[in-house]
Image (cartoon, rainbow, N blue to C red):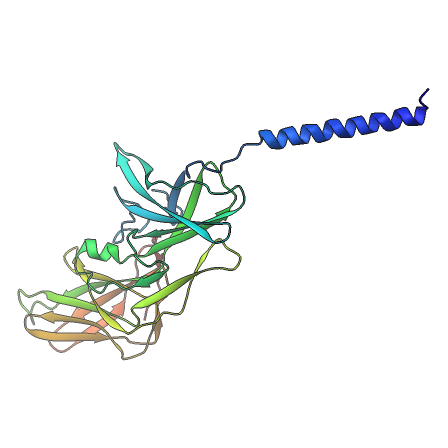
Length: 297
């Protein structure tokens, strides 16, 4: 006959075996998303709804395209593309080049707009922004996501360049029936690289490089022009804006040392008369996509 101690021992072993079997069955039954299509949306300034560069900068527009890079395993990568589709007031992100989860463990997703950047993570400044389409093409927006695969992911993105908007006034007594033409804004650099942070989950802008350059600005809304530049430092007295009135060339200088930051919108007032060209800051409402800069000099 088995002793009581033996019976207890067998019972414990039996329970352990049952527990192990149950765990194994649960692991086998646990859902895996490997191979499933990635269902992604993209938000800027807390909004999921192209970003209208000249507006608040937080609303995507119909048929905007975003590229997404998935990094997994031993730095293997796959790239997909998503299109923003709006119909009857409703919208969704439609995969154009499909992207699927490649592993069960953590993956990194890096997204960028415009989608046709040929050498991401290097951004090269677009120096011709003379119409709204070209201006928007210069509006680099990117973001990063790092986690285990999920049924749905929202990738937070943000504007990475600096947007300059000039609201101008030309003295009618000095220049009757004349307007500004060929406006240009100075960028201290024409290239910058982005790096993945060591702890993942974000992209970090490196030190801008390349040569300084003049950007052909976009005229809009009657008495404004805007341009996107790479963030940089400007010194007092440095020529920042150039333009023409008729056949005459004009320029405006910085009034004090100014540091442009990524994702900020800088708005200036430009007054042009026969005896002066004056560039001063003005206050604007807060933007949700762009960070408004109220401390311009």
